[in-house]
Image (cartoon, rainbow, N blue to C red; front, side):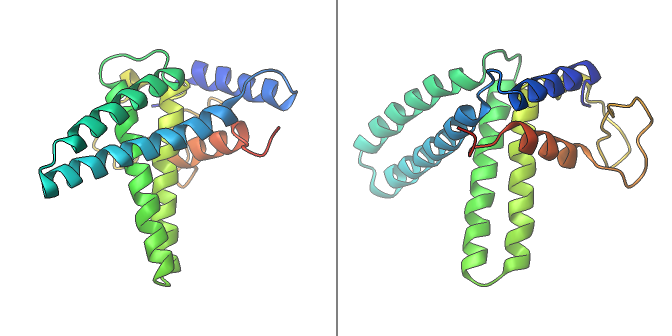
Length: 182
């Protein structure tokens, strides 16, 4: 579940960003994309090692992994439990879905590509929600419901058909992170 206090805090950060105050998420967004690519490079070194059995690929994999870990610390400052690993997998899954979406697009499957891109963006938004303190993993509860509910800013109960957590996070990320802002 989304923590309401954290949501309000995040919205305040967005307002400060809009007023020109210092909150440079666009640099962090660029860094997160770079980290996605480092994760992908790690995967390629893994597969190349297994295909060739040449140990130099293990050394290269380890070097890239250390770089990725160091850069990850710039974005993920406070984490508990599995949040570090969850974050890595959210970025990795988002990157892979983007790549498969791009391949679908190349094949002319715009509908399939759009679906994959939407899922990739949902995962990417969840990454930011988790690491900006908007999503509290301690508040997520096991439920028979198939949808994760989002605590709205206006304290009204969630209405069926209203924006889900991924859509709301996507809106927040779009508002807060603008790579074109200089």
